Length: 435
Image (tube, rainbow, N blue to C red; front, side, top):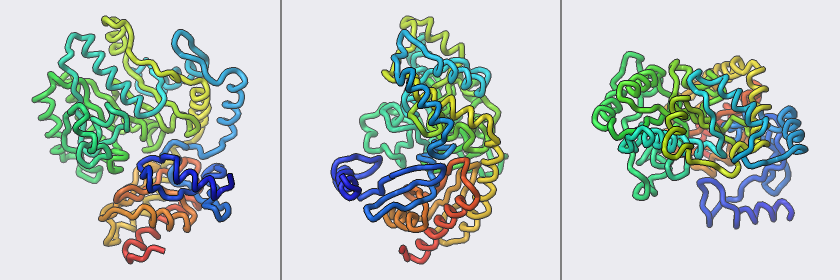
């Protein structure tokens, strides 16, 4: 099939995320990706755009990195996959050791899964099985905050924002969970602790039935790209200890440097009982996630009636994915990633914060390698995307949000290309004049 035929077939038969299954748009076809550049084709020849999304935040080293490619090629000559039940392999062992070494000292056990959403499912099952083993099966409900997002699988949908989230259509089919008010934004004074009151009240009333609190530390991602104060997270940890409730931290979007710390929980200097990792784990080359927990939780589950944790994906610890993760983490940890992220943050602040002055803009937020423009009204997805492509940039806005989470290797002129394209969208909305 030629390019026109491929794009047409895709439109008629291929399902894409959060896109109509019967009235889909014609999408650009990716022909090649290198570093921070995507080569696209819409049927009229190839053209290059700067990628400001890092493929939904995971391609932190950009695309086609030779170190990761070489590691994958070498592993394929040995074996691409082997079952993890009853067998083990070096890539998984090395990856587990790295994750144990770079996360909190209390996290010593690593469970690998296929995706971020599944890693949260695993975390929730761990919490439930832990309390069952403790003969407290009544602790089977989760407490979270509004405006959060934890994935698209069934248990994870139940802890996403029940009203403004993406899963309200399924509310009647999901187990009801407990929701507290969302924390105030990071701009709120550190001394203002009123936003913790609702969560504290929920714990006081329901802690006998709560298995765990689950939160995205510091950054609420797909639920609104909101940043909140580290002090709030510290208070959550204290409350979990006080009321004998586990703390699950979902670092799928924030892990591996995105917020300026290797892990976002480091902003608050706390530790999780269960930690979820994904997205940037493999540098955006393979799908892989991990759920880490403490010896106490692992031993409690393992010494229970089941004698094991009841979960086991077919592609658990896929050797190719673990190999990609090992290469990606070696690249990250041996680089000056922190300086790069701070440089991105500084440039975002310089080039995006002035856009707050536009009447159509509700807010502009920057943290680490995350730049967010929140509009007062929802953006027209197709018009916005078309304008961005004309400006030589790939971003995927949603709702009122136009944001960028680029690869860490992005060059200043490439980042300026992104911020100028974002400015062009704001100007077009202000003037009601999309090109």
